[in-house]
Length: 439
Image (cartoon, rainbow, N blue to C red):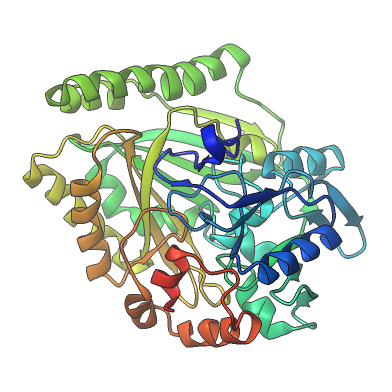
């Protein structure tokens, strides 16, 4: 499922279908040397350069009318170091391939998001995360990275080498250069027990602190127009493995989560007034289940229903109040929302523009089906999130700009100063970066 395929006339589109770009030319370098040459040539021709991943961002963070760098030949594992417990991978490697290769070697990442179609560099550069009490986003697991910069030189960055670049480039938004390889910390593969359980909205909110504290990975989905949520707790387990059965798995993950859900989206688009009824029915269709498996089989699931998404990180202690305001807004507004609201957490980290930078965070994500008007809902939600000094996910829909980010990121100036040093001529600039980082 790649969305990086070009449409007609060399038009590139993202997965959500809400961003399109027409680059002057496309390059798929097979080596770091070829990539550096492509960067130098673009500079000589007066063209901007952007690398794309799998197109899973809903913002135009990768869009360009200059040179589009495609990642598919820069893939694969370079090295597994069992003494240091690290793996070094080429930047274009899909997370799915990394997870499967590590599992074969008896290794795993500590934490991951809920989809794995993205490339490792696309996922980390935009701050992709799962949920965790003690473990953070995918980028927090980076031990070193390699960055092709505007002058064609390649920097190796870690806590010891170019540490100030390392602090920022782990979530670099594509603004500092093009990531060519990433070294992740890994650990011996382990088992996770998942417990999925419906729970009333008010109960989840009143017990949120305990649910967060008692579980390594806690998340829940609230169904707008209902008082129902589905909670998910993932915790390490001594075993035995007890995977979701194939029939049950197909029924719950494919039929209910993707098939019936897709049908509900179609009905909802044709008859918006039916959405609250559909929401009541689908929230009641959920039953409790528990299963135990290796991490990527528990953390991730297929997403076949296309959507557009906005997600904000708010301070963790503000999440309950923010969710109450969001629910009141939906009830007041007459909006018809057919997608659940997803809530996750992350501990504070030390990455300059991480949404959890220096702040224990909770994430609230709102979604709308691809092709449905989402502006009114997202605008109203964003007003609530920003009142709590929310920080939007870099790869998801938002309307914030550099002026706003300078207020909610204490180290924002540190990032822009580094960008001035590494890319003074703005070779990696596009409209999105101009808006979020300033010209």
